Image (cartoon, rainbow, N blue to C red; front, side, top):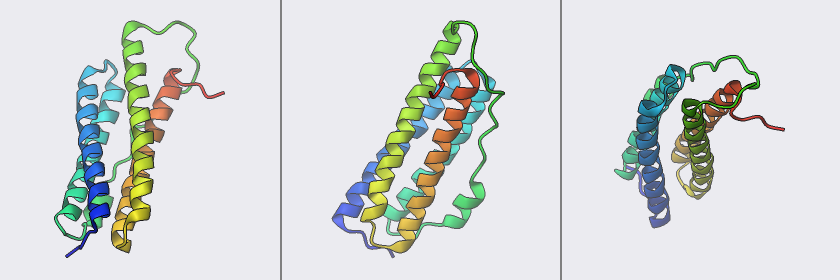
Length: 158
C-alpha cells in the first residue's frame, strides 16, 4: 500500500488532469488531421497517455504501479517522412496540421516540465521511477511531433 503525502496527492491529481487532457486532445486531433501518418502518430500517443492515466490512478488508489505492462506496451512512434524545406506556401490542410502539431508540442513541453516537479516531490523511490518513465515517454512524444513537423517543413530550428 502506497501512502501519499498531501503534496504528493495534489501533484498526482494535477498529472492526472494533464493526462486526461492529452488523451482528449490526441483523440480529437487524430480525427481532424488529413495526414494518415499524423493520425497514426496521435492515435498511438493517445493510447500511451491512457496508460499513463491508468498508472497515475493506480498510485492515487494506493497501489504500487505495475511498470512491467507499461514498459511492454511502450510503442515507437511511426517514423516521419523525409526531411526537407517546403518550397510552397502551406495549403489549408497543412496549416491546420501545423497548428495542431504546434499545440501538441507545446502541451508535451509543459507536461514534461510538470512531471519534473512531481518526480522531485515523491518520497517513494518506485513512484519516482514510475513518473520518470512516464516523463521519458512524454519527451518521446514531443520528439516524435518535432521530427514530424521538421519533416514537413512546419518547424525549422535555426
